[in-house]
Image (cartoon, rainbow, N blue to C red; front, top):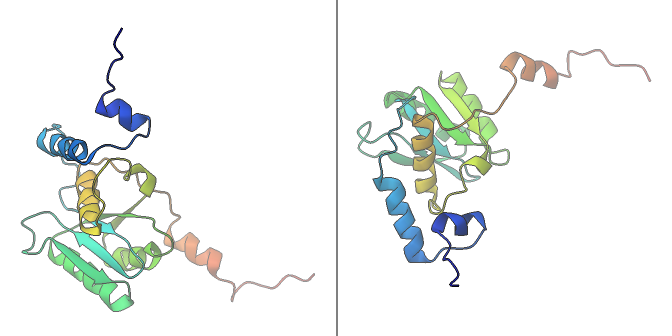
Length: 173
């Protein structure tokens, strides 16, 4: 009896690597088929967070350059927030990469944007999307369809109170 050939899905589940042509064919299938998903967040953006720079993607038609790179210093974080607001963005999805997301999230929240902090494990399982540009576009697409879960982060009042040690009385030992 002949052995049955495994499907692409079965091979991916087993952790096997696909050939380049198989990866491309799978990517075309994923992009071509209409999943009939409804857009939950029409004004969504995606950010690929990095140590030296952040790549930000907005929906096509919002700007002539829908993907931009911003540095990780404070002035560029404010420029990114201004650009997002000028493009009509209300909500942003970004991955919690190291500690690099913290300053970015604070600047975006101060600008009045809703920030979805997502776990990178849930977005990196599919083949492809290896560049920073592709990653931020992928995050934007998933977020616009409402497929990303927001991680819990305490409100600013609680975060500020827990780190405030100057106004706390010292304990006697």
